[in-house]
Image 1 (cartoon, rainbow, N blue to C red):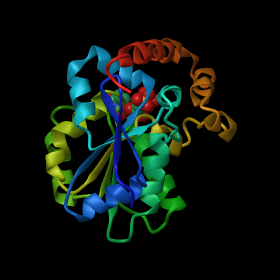
Image 2 (cartoon, rainbow, N blue to C red):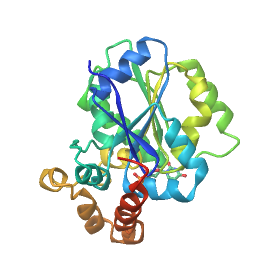
Image 3 (tube, rainbow, N blue to C red):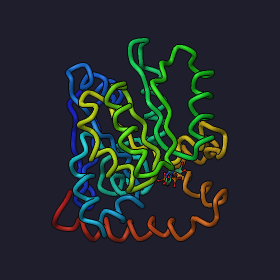
Image 4 (spheres, protein in one colour):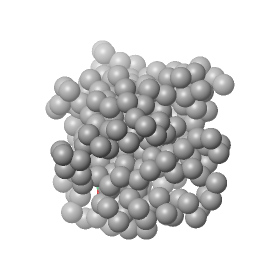
Length: 243
Ligand code: UDP
């Protein structure tokens, strides 16, 4: 396995140089927890306005280049990297689990979380699903959810509560499962459940998944303004501070 290399964009880390899944599972077998952040332009812009989020992103054990903006930024800086969406990391991580290792699905609407887990069971019959919990629970339900996680000690915990809630949620609870791989996966359950579709491969391969998403969910246009804003901010931020 190679060495983990840390790069920086707008004061936020991005890691490369290793096979992410193997690196995470090696940490799990060493008894270490990992918080995985899947960085995109929108998240970077949120962190720019929210110091608490920036701190969480900076302290993540692994930050992967989820968004086209991130990859293009580094390309301009002369560093080639492949875009690696969080959903793909989650999928290949689950494919690598053995029969003694399990996954917990936490987040999304009640039927969506169940359907996503059900579809995974069909896709990978040997997958050990430790539990499923939707993401619309009340404050009163929280202690029970935490107790379940503590008792189950899943290998992988996928948290689909949206940004930045999932990042704070993981940060505040990672001590409950101190060997787990915790990944904030945004809207991935919606896709696994068949509620939404990922862009066709051509869009993904050309860093245009955001464009397909805009076509599918036009009401997100305001959120997508983060992309050009990020381009300006990242390139001006970098002058003199990063390379
Ligand atoms: N969600 C949730 N609880 C909440 C708010 C959102 O479980 O209180 C879920 C929502 O159902 C969706 C996911 O969080 O499955 C966020 O999806 P989105 O596409 O907004 O994620 P992004 O990747 O843009 O952060």
